[in-house]
Image 1 (cartoon, rainbow, N blue to C red):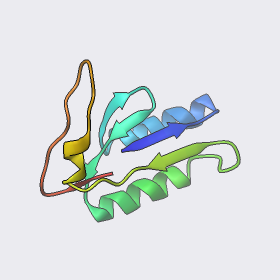
Image 2: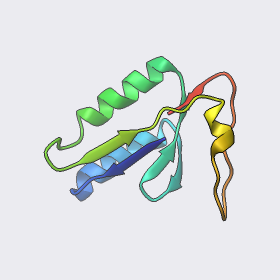
Image 3: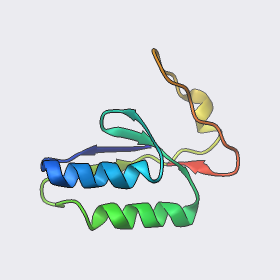
Image 4: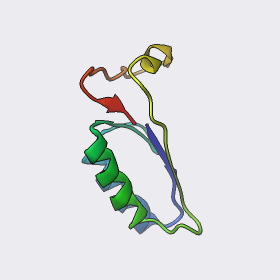
Length: 88
């Protein structure tokens, strides 16, 4: 799971575009990404080169398959499931 708080509109849009290539938006600034380890490295490198490290914040929550059973949500949506990859 990736969440972000980015101050500049242009940078925010770039990060959104990057994340759309790796996962699914589940809230305005939260994406769920079911990706491999090499995809994770690529994702974090791309975002790190895009954001302003002085004013922006991006958080990566790595979750194992067993942890996903503890996810709760209310309203529209679903929990992504895939045993082959891990959720970030």
